[in-house]
Length: 222
Image 1 (cartoon, rainbow, N blue to C red):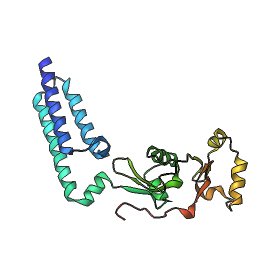
Image 2 (cartoon, helix red, strand yellow; image 1 turned 90 degrees about the vertical axis):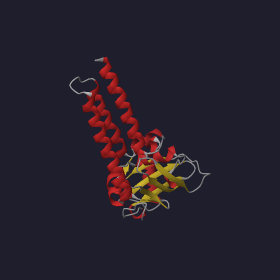
Image 3 (cartoon, rainbow, N blue to C red; image 1 turned 90 degrees about the horizontal axis):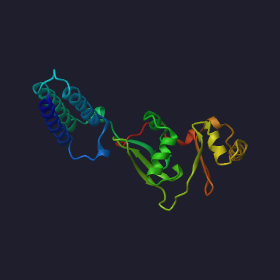
Image 4 (cartoon, rainbow, N blue to C red; image 1 turned 135 degrees about the vertical axis):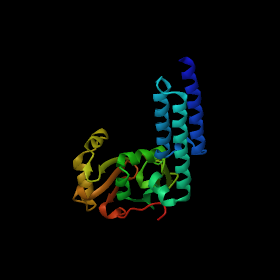
């Protein structure tokens, strides 16, 4: 029994190494969700087979070889067919282009504004006002270019797609009446028309309206 488990572990390790080779020289951040499915399913095959005495070495080998062959075939197909590649693995999405929010693309990728701000901060951009381009890559990470490398101003979001962030206002000792009055002074009477509003002590209010966003879905290939 112990010898059988040991053999299964050895063949399982060999199978995992082969899958890694089939995926190519990718770092963890470059692995797409589809690539992750490869390894998760293979891990499930190994987990079910190692401690099940009804599954012998032959069954395990057939499973590994069949799954590895499918991976190899799919990888070859997507390398040769751009449409299939995009359908299976997706394509980069432009979330901000030339400083303009691409709201449809943001919503299509199920990204909340605070998530977008977090992704920007992780790339040393602390205000969307300073974001020139933000591209969401296939693997989920972002590529970001800023308007100014010198601008490190930390901002807070006060309005998210027409909704007041009341807890944020309270946390930073800002009142709703102050915000509404400040917006009215700039000609914005209806909060529901505002897609995004952030504030910083240094730069004040940064306001994005429905008229300021990109209406069409824009992808990296234009």
